[in-house]
Length: 210
Image 1 (cartoon, rainbow, N blue to C red):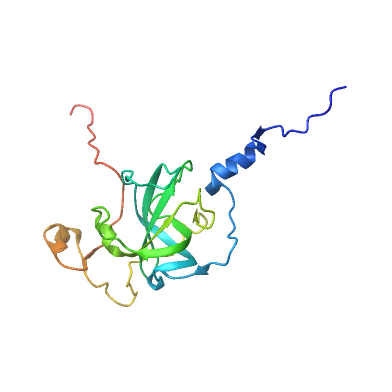
Image 2: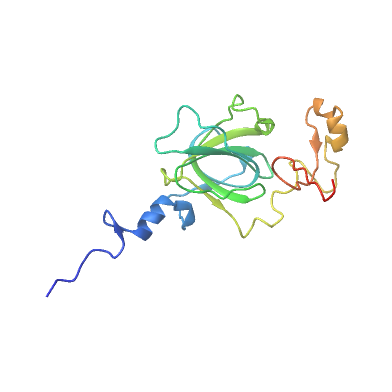
């Protein structure tokens, strides 16, 4: 009589397919910090090492061309500008296999172990100037850092008002979009309040007979 097999039904080098999937796609599974992290406002961040957690909203998102020097196993990097009511933090999010489904307006929690000064020479994106601090995370390689989309809170009115806004005061520097285009952009600290209707290149639609 053959002996019963003791190997897992689904295995890869001794690990089940579920364990392999959890290792390859950590953001698709639950994550709990193993150490104590301090919840802190972005404006109070100090460059240096420390376990901190930031809650903020994604106000800018782009994927720059791969740099010459990248962490081992990394395939690319997203740069996010995450904002709370006090300031903006730039997050460099390295990725290898995880397909991060990130978009503007999402509320995210970021766990990190180091804050650095913002490098204003990075890229030519205008919003880079609004971030005073930066952090770099690679959750697939470093389990002490993580990013989580707070789906249950994304639609809440958290961190939606412009920084410095008070309901009983006029927002300083607020101008109409036309005035901004006509030269208002040359003045410091100018703000434009708009509603984003679409993201991407402009599309030209033609109807029948045109």
